[in-house]
Image (tube, rainbow, N blue to C red; front, side):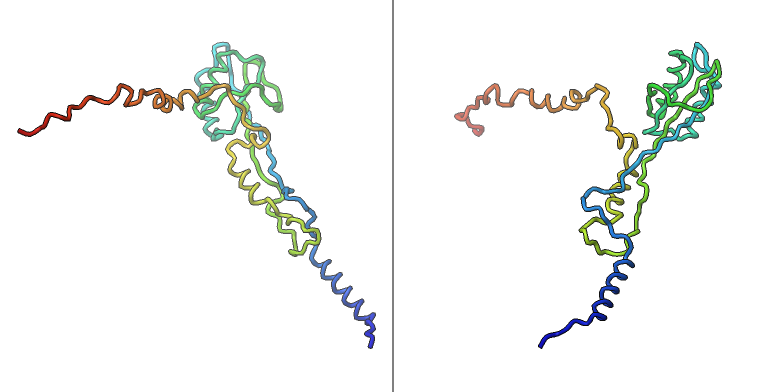
Length: 217
């Protein structure tokens, strides 16, 4: 006995499957284990113009710049640079001294800013970076079905967002920290070297002990 397929039933099943897959939305197509959502680094420049002379910054200008640094909440990861027509060494020393209160050094070369620096003034520029992952979290997946065994659209969002939030200097996501040429190896290993170079306790031999004499009467 042969069973003949019902064309109407077959068409109905095909249509139902088609509508079901269509209702699931776009399926993910990232078949690798690399996350599509990656951290990006955005930078903002903030500038202030202060009066300067050959002898450095006047005391009132130093106070104004120090208060501006406090208002900016200057912190690690920020970059401080000086823009102007050949600022003197005294000006650089004054600005560097104020930046050092926040644990920062002056950077070489200032970014481009709007406007001109008036004669007799220098522009102090603070560059602040921020890292974030655009498009995260991503919940656009409407179904767990994936015909290509692909990762979800939000794959990597948690890890990369945490890295972007925790990195102390966002610029290190673009290029790693560079060494200063200084080393603390010699100072950090002094205790180890002292222990290694100490003479062994038995180097001079064991002390002579007379086992014949008694301690009693």
